[in-house]
Image 1 (cartoon, rainbow, N blue to C red):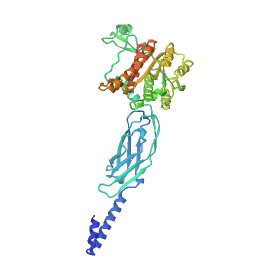
Image 2 (image 1 turned 120 degrees about the vertical axis):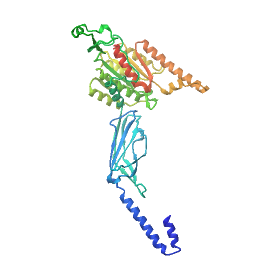
Image 3 (image 1 turned 180 degrees about the horizontal axis):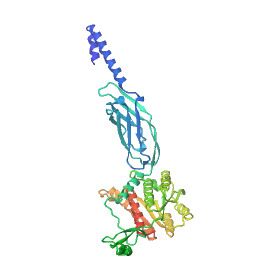
Image 4 (image 1 turned 90 degrees about the horizontal axis):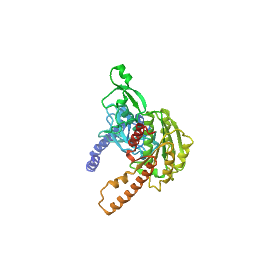
Length: 425
């Protein structure tokens, strides 16, 4: 505007041409100086901190760090090229370099699917406060990212175990009488302890009541049988039923390892796709994690005879068989009932199914319209058929667990610990 006014005045008086030329020359010097002071691409050093591995369905933080001494005090915007499938929380991150030329920002990822991904280059836009130019550069820091089953849940559970806390807040598990079968050590007798646990020899030596400390039997065997058929592809909240089952299988396997049990895994749909023989130790957990990472759903009807026949020739020792699947009405689940009841003759079988949160929400919601009444009736009919299926399994000696998908992991771990403490296996 100033230059336009000077040029207009130059039409009146020729002396303003000199003023207009000087004015535009000064503007040009300011523009060139401002562009020169903005650092180029080679001046920036970028680093991206991605959790390794990423955990399925868990919110995790990606940290970005950029260093450039010449950028001290500059304003900036960053756009990280994280794949949309990882569900990044923000697309553009505003920030500012500090006095040392360091910029730190972070954003969250919540991946809903397992698999291998690649986080692309980082776009950076910088400008000076009150400056004339804005410089945008692309920093080539391409990194792979692999989404595994939720290992963060395992780490959280490790902390609760180390601190002696229950897995779920407010819950305290009691030890049923006679459930502990192995000697774990000696301790002082406490009020309320069973007097039959008093060790009279140790009491006589120490001249104070000493009781035996018992624990659930170790060295037993757990087989996780994971269905990957059509029904497990159904969404249940943010994850599919199969992904909920994968996360629960990993946490259950780790828990069993901590209790000294051998853990194995079978994955199947219309045929057996993967088998990890029962074992113990950190290497076994790595094998389980890799096998669960590779699990993919198939849009086929499951054949429950395939894994059970497969195991019949390989597992002769009585084991706890945890079957993670979905249960419908008695007709659709007839094959499941037949095979589970047959296997219950030799093993302790636990059938685990996940209730759809959307169906439970319809059942719990108040009915205020005719359409709502029809939806409630259809939902109740479906859930009643599921309950009838579970009743038939339980009458045949099969243990059952029907829980909402989002609560599967803690419920399954608690059920496993209950089985251990009651000495059912």
